[in-house]
Image 1 (cartoon, one colour):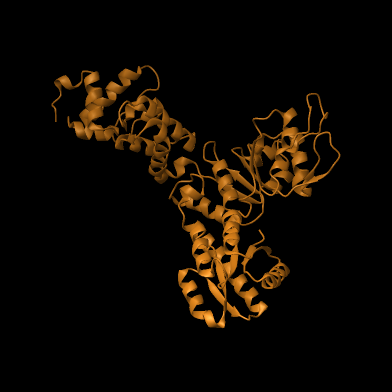
Image 2 (cartoon, rainbow, N blue to C red):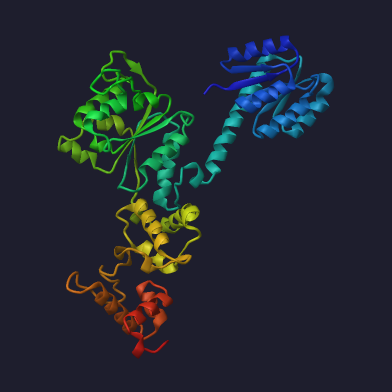
Length: 455
């Protein structure tokens, strides 16, 4: 993006000379002959850098500097000063100006100072970004595991390029979140982000959705329609479920990727677009290629930079962070909820075939069911409680898949845990991964504790 230089000086000939010099360097320029006018431009247009004269009527440079930095504390301001006001220029530096130039000055010197300070400002912005919290900058990307950090590093590297990206991973791992993260940290962040679910659109409508159509192109085309690629110009288009794209559309998409242009359905005008393509799939496209279901040439066009998102079962150390994040996210709807230690332990053991999406759905369901502030194992689906699954070896019992009711299976587990712990209820609860109070409640439900000591 071209930098904009704002020149604030009451001498019109000085403004003209500076503006001409800046434009020769390829910068956009704005000019103000009065301090208030300059502040209005800073407020409304957010220039990249300001060249400010100290000595001006009505509002002097120091006052303009003060208000400018109140509007944007990171705005680079270079002071123009005469020999007799160098002390004032130093005062301006203490207030936050980045540099000063004394009149008369050499234009080449000023150009160099401007260029250096623009670079410094850009680096400062990048450092701020890299130090910021991932949950804010990466649209709710949460995690500290090595597998997660590898994805983050790939996002940081690829976002500064313009190559196509193929994001792979199981359903629910957050492929669109990764696509948004790449877009938001790229030079295209001020452009549009246009998502398209290729599996959700009927084949007969897909071409019109992607490339648009002209009036009268087909029955029902009563007006011109702008396609998603056209809407994404200067930005990013996210093609989700790309593996479900029909072969006929794969050929047309390949042409767009090769030529950066297309025609609307029913049109003859060739439209050029500047679009970055990020595609995503939970399918193994290599196998789809072998079966003739996906074009190999399109695959290599899309897969310039592959990013594979690990499933949640391969990053179990992130479960606690994700749970906290989801609980906070649901707080406005369901109020303050807490996850009991027993629930968290179950979450860490579960394989999460639906990944993060399943985790969120489970927590939201439990938040609805639980009447108090704490979510307990009894609020979870059966498959997570693991009642009919193979019990942990430390309990020492294998349950049949069929033949016993859920109530009978639960009673057997409770009795076996008590036997294993020699009647110690706390240890029995620990073996089952539940709280002592939950254990006692379930034992009482099955009339188990009548003949057991209350240890």
